[in-house]
Image 1 (cartoon, rainbow, N blue to C red):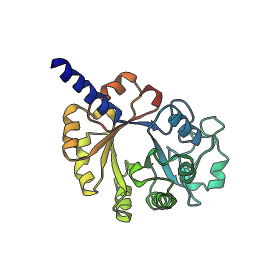
Image 2: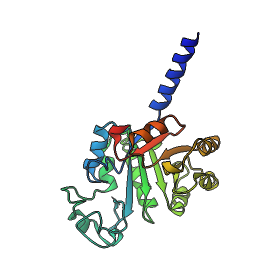
Image 3: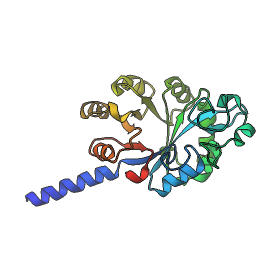
Image 4: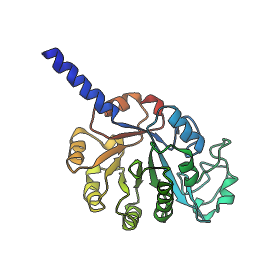
Length: 245
């Protein structure tokens, strides 16, 4: 009887761990230049269930993948990404690589519909353009709405997005006590909170879960920390190294 209970427990633990999404941070940031198509492909190749990407609205109106507001650190260019048109951005190389800055539309053309996609709205005025593309690709049956999650540190941008659609999934990103995000998350009818893994513990995870909110935590690169988080009730782990999952 004890052996049966033990094996049932192991089975439940395994199923719980398997349900935790392995999410590649900016693609596979630890392997290939971040927020590029090549990095996204690499993450999927390494077993990622989903991808986290960052987006800005560039001067000519396209939604493009990039993390920093300024181009200087991550490319061979300079200035603010929002002040450049797409033609100018196409000429830049990301992190001394052969890879260029892609558009969100190129990403949606590149992934399978079963891939979970966490779109972080980095810049202001990204809500409308990003939503328009998602709707376009849903109509084309290229993606599924339940595999799309919009997140942001800028909760006002998420508020703008919610005013445009009551169906999209939202997540509030926080780098402080994640419990402070609960009230606003519920107000926005968000589905998740995306906290720094260092701010998580069994107690606040339990409180977040009690409110019906999911947890997609970032950026977890140590195999030890990944394995530790797998034993807790989180829904996804965002990592630079999907192969360590």
